[in-house]
Length: 306
Image (cartoon, helix red, strand yellow):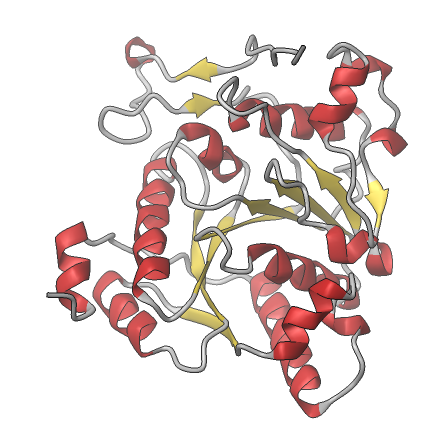
């Protein structure tokens, strides 16, 4: 029998609190305001399902580690394969290990849910509730709470949340309550850009009550960026990096490796350099992007659909 995940720590933003909801008609999950990550720079990586967010996140973590930063990557997907190329294995999730102690977090040890990966990157897989039974916001909240209780965030410079698919509810948007910047991974096609527009909407909603702001767009598996450029010009977004549809990137997943561990070639080195450039730019920060999302119909018209 599946164990139900407790939801006692979930809060929905009450209208009577004097604090406006995160968007019109919103009933989004509000995490405990006392559970804050601390001094680390926090990035949330979003994008359409299957667009390559985990590959992007893991290589970004590796790049930050090569900049001498202490990095923690948190996978936020029931698939729990975000850190696969960093650790060379599938990790047990926070929800898995909480279930083994009947959801008594005080009984857990650090090594039960935090695992070392490539070049010292620390890896956590938050996981998710059984299908149809809970909310991803609880999972994110419990993960951050555990990390703080074990003092694992005090010596961390960079935290990367790798978040599943499109944003359709407050639970999936919960990492935005912790992040300083949200980066959106997209391909140069309509479906990816449509998903990106919904993510821009979610970030705008969270920005009303939290410190998260848009940091830029990462074009992935894209020979060109003409469609992305059209959308960016209309909304105020900017391209932060571009990664080509390179077979070595695909093979790196099969080899359980980051691109920094793959055999050298001019193409691979160019991608490594782009990740290092992106990590350095993200670390330095910059002005947030005040992007304004488009209406669905306008996206169809902009990108040439009849």
